[in-house]
Image: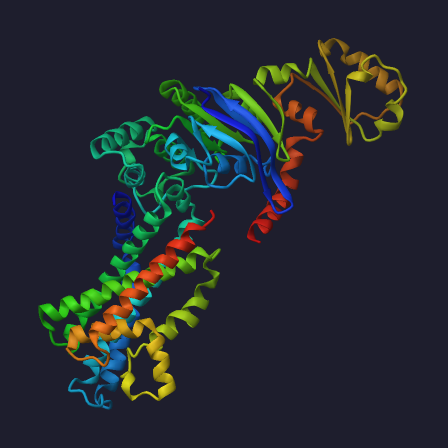
Length: 249
Length: 327
């Protein structure tokens, strides 16, 4: 437990110190919210829902923000590899799984803070306060998204030599995960093939869960969302733990 | 009990043998040096002893713990300063120390007390709350050494500790390592390709070349084995002419490309005689120099190459190792 906390603490300290990173990674989701939210609010109506488009979009953007931050936080262990710090951790008498868990929780924490900031900002552009229970449900799903995708980031980073492949991952993994997740459009109105694809995207269940928390409505039963996302998180931690074990420095 | 006991340690990367069947012991409180050019297998040896790389064959016992069966025992017993920096630059000196202390599960009070003591010892206490990225190379090295000592290891590994440091800082670090060795009664294993460093610091030296230990002894004994002072004569065309001239020193001569060395005791007295004889044979002399034997000569004697020549070739070998490792 001490070890997990130690590594968590380091990640959080580094995050809080990198002001430019915090502001930088807030930029994109905020712009998404403003441009898409205000731009499409008057022309788009969600079929069969009482909420307007901005309210529909906010949970998606919150989930996106958590997704991007957590994947990036996971992949950051490549920097540790390149700058040598990973050696210091790996040569200590601790198990690699503990190190990996510490990294995962650290990354997830930063991702949740990022998502939380977006959430608070959303209150100013039209999201009505969801109440305590709703907020806690949303937070729970954000935590799971954060853990699952930080672990995925670590799994990927364990097999990467340097940051060269980063763009590849952004373009062909992270963006499709986001695009297919129903963050920006309701999945019930999609053509069948496309809909099936979205149901294979784990982030869909995250977005739907956060949406249920924030707006009280979702297209997938929140219990199913919770079950799927939780299982996915466990699998990702196993995968990340397994691949991280084989890391050579 | 020996601090470190290494038997027939071998590491292969594919076809390439980086460490070839080496054996050595380190006594408690001893400073042992692995001296050799870059790419000779020093870092690979250290990596295996520190449980960071798996040995292909062989055995090592550190502080009574077998490298293979009690990895955590070994890890608790050693402190290590890697060749490449391994600090977190975004954290302060104190935070780097604290991170280490927590990883090694040192209780809070003890941890804080030792961090202060060690930071004072390496002269970084005043800078404890500054981010490491503002530190110079020498300060970073000192911090890494302090960190490596935090959990009171029995054996300290220093992999090229003064690489890339200016001579003044290097001198300072040497004094520092000697002091640590005396104050903490800690065994030190140091790898280096600086002859002077090995000579100055080490109680015993293993000369390592192409993965093999070619000689092992105290620096004094190694130099004594050379048997006298060394005269180095540079000459472009000596080979043909020197063969059957019957000089008394000819069997004390080693021949190399473009130069040869003569090892004689009381070399000063024979110098004029030797030079006249060479000129008499019509051998062109570019330069003549004479010196007391150094570890450089020892290396030359055992490997037939100068350690400086090795530096260039080693780069290719490292590149090759890197490629092999990727596959």
